[in-house]
Image: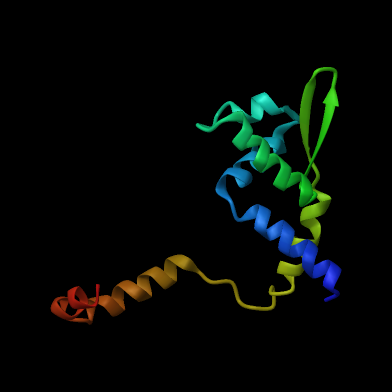
Length: 121
C-alpha cells in the first residue's frame, strides 16, 4: 500500500473512531443538513460540533458549503470506499457467529468453578 493511501486510510479511520462523528454520518445518510440541524440532537456546543465537522471534512467523508447564510453538510460516500475495499481484503476469513461464540463461552465458564471465576475478575 502506498504511503499516500495509508495516510488517507489513517485519516478516515481516525475520523470514524469517534461515536459523535459516526452519528453525524448516519444523520447525513438521510439528506444534506444545515450545521445547526446537525448540532441539534447533541448535548455539546456548536463550536464542538464544528470541530467534529472539520475532522469529517478533512477526512473527505463530508463536504460543507454555504448556501446563502447557512452552512450545509453533505455526505461524501466515495471517501469511505477506500476503507471499505481495504476491509474487504480480510473477507477471506470465516465470519464469526457471535451467538455460537457466546454459547461456547457460556459453556466453558460453566465448567470453571465459581470461586476461580470470581478471583479472576
